[in-house]
Image (cartoon, rainbow, N blue to C red; front, side, top):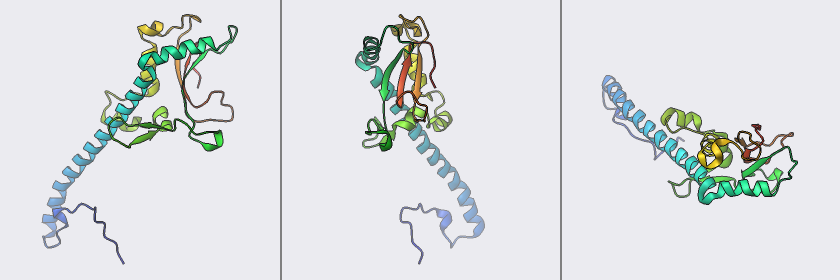
Length: 193
């Protein structure tokens, strides 16, 4: 027994009483509308993702939060430590690695919609955003690097080490991983990967 999809769009070209050539001509016209609708949906999705990414980065720097993380890092590090990094944000989405936290990032536009933190931090959305909104398409790393390269953060140069600041993002834990999954700013001039 065949099932009927009640949500399936019905098109004039589906009318079996029409001659075949007329149905083909209708299908050609319908194709344009179908593609326009598809492009519109994908464009909205790309904009929602970038709004989410931009809102997430803003939340990391709002109310002087990023500067406070720098101060905290300096306060809690040893003077002779070779590795100087600022832990900006961490997450764990895998039970086998311990308690799950910060697993998702909420969309600012659609109530109840969220994206996996791994998807956002990895830039997994770039194929979509590069195609539909290339002028806005950036990763969390790129957006945050723009912030740390700004005047507020000494144009991207650490005042203590005199090295360049590098935003480092980790989203998958490997056997040799030193850092937790998340976002860090390297103050020692090394771009950790």
